[in-house]
Structure formats: C-alpha cells, structure tokens
Image (tube, rainbow, N blue to C red):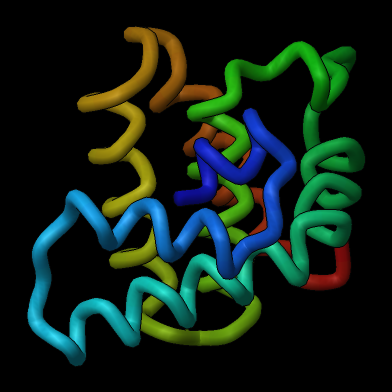
Length: 121
C-alpha cells in the first residue's frame, strides 16, 4: 500500500480499498496492516526528514520507491514501538532482500540502525 501511495499520491483510504480488493487476510491482519499504512503515511514527512539527516550525500528522491516505503514503514514502527526494534529492523531488511536491489539491505540497515540509536534524529 505504501508503494502504491507513493507512486500515485492517492488518498490513503482509496489505496486501502483498492489493495483489499485483491488481497486476502483475516480481519485482525487487515486492521493491523491498515494501521501501519495509515501511520506511515501520516508520519511520512517526519520519516523523510529523518532519512535526510541520517543518509550521507543521498537525497530521498533518489531512493527507489520500494526502499522509501520500507524506510517509512520501519521508522513509523520504531517510533510507535509496535514491536521490538531489532524485529522491526530485521523485517525491514527481509522486505528489502525480497523486493529491492542487492545493495538495499545494507543501506537500509545503516539508516534504521542509526535511527534506532538516535531517536532524536
């Protein structure tokens, strides 16, 4: 959903509606996924600012959309404490391994580790 939202700039409620037309999940999973999506969208500007502070010589708009989406989700989760930080970071890296480039996990790990260690960033 975050990827689609970033690509289309549609209202989050529309993105959710379209996503759940083709995706299947239990009601509690849907609610949790929607909560994470809505929170990540709501805090996207803060996440983007954090990435800008923590990445050296790398503009946010140069990041692949999938990497931006993973970072926004993980940074929201870190700030919201939805799970232990190491679990959040590990899950973000697994997403990067599955959906992004071979270099993405190392880059994302650096940003997320720094964000975890410097929550004021």
